[in-house]
Length: 401
Image (tube, rainbow, N blue to C red; front, side, top):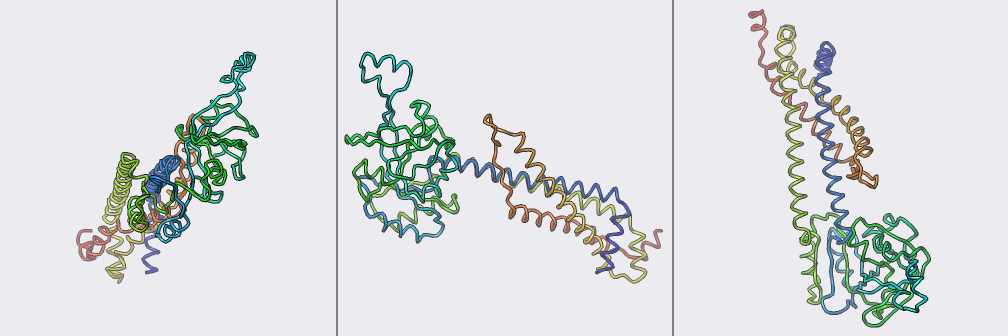
């Protein structure tokens, strides 16, 4: 075996230009294949993140009344495989009323017109448990000014809603419900979740504040669930519906609500796999072709080696080792090039806000698996040239010169 490795190395170093071209071809093929895979995963992650910005993986909602036994329900949900986050919450349509600070409004105050003193907007008030909201929505990372509303009587407001209200950190606003309840709260921060519909309607507080405003003490009206695998949302929702068996509960999942998006993402994944396959196939075919020519070029050397006593198996393994070396070197360079591609992509392919268009994350597991497949494919590309070498007879070589 060591003799075969030495000979394979000599064959590679003897024709350096040919070896360089093969390694470069493998490197480019591998780098493009991995980059397309990571780009696809990044695009998928970005789309999922935007979808999760306004709808979690599974939502359980009360049909007619509040959910008072939610802790028992929470324990049952926790027993289901694949559930990562459970978030009990209380949501309510409400109105937010603020003092009107517009110059025009100040002028009209002289007329003692109450309508001009205040301005109000319809909102969707959401009350979350402090330790759950970040697991579910990663809200802290979406706050661009101020801080989260963790204490009682605190709220955070969306970017688009605040463009209408024009309030600042520390300002007091009033929340009003259709039942006639009202509560004065303090604005502690502003968020941008990346969806105008959400940014212009959600006002977020802690669960206790919303319960206090609505009079629903120790009650909720929704449970949102995050999953380890978002694509299993429909199957898990059916499992939960069967386990909970409560007619007062309505079950929704993001796949049902975004059928066109799911279909597009599935199509994109299939297209990516097909592209990756053909890039790998092109790389393998080029190695087969070049190593096949290499066998013909080295007929004499192989014939002499066989005449000197080297076995057929050892002669054929020379080309397998040669392909393995080429595959390893080409793949390592390809992985290195991939990091350059990602850096430049994130640097130049940007949104109008200056952020990367697609958040490409370096998935080490995906890179290692892809690199392993490429090395194995490169090695097995030498299979046909190795058979040629195996069948080669030294007598035939001497006879044909």
